[in-house]
Length: 161
Image (cartoon, rainbow, N blue to C red; front, side):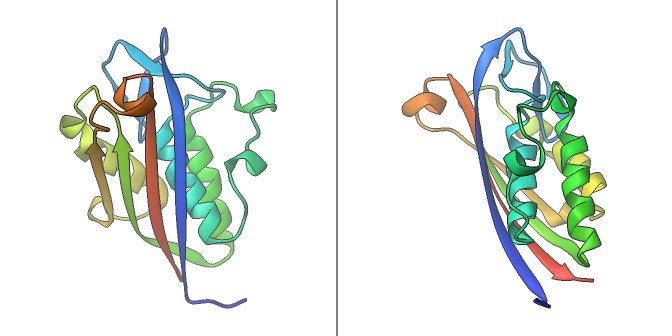
């Protein structure tokens, strides 16, 4: 199907635990806890990756990078994003923009947003100005609000090259 534009939505959530590094958008953020998972568990990059794959009707991260595959143990989520980007590029699509929200009570993410946008833009072959990253709290509600987890939502727009 030769559709000129495609929109994808991505979501991810991971539990916060001690003894892990906190990586968001490929940027290490100083914090006493990190995200638990098979890879580096970067919820933001995972949400963007799922949005890319979804926009191109290629399934989800679990299909392409299963947590049962030892090749993906502790892998950088930026490597997974690069793989997903390569798949959409091979179909003739380019990323037009990314809009993402990270849900976290702590730490404050504002000081890291510029670096996160630059990190993601480098993989997606776009300018940082084509990426929006917002940080929100959950006002103390549910697992994110209690500081037990972090989550992220992302929307991407693809266009034919």
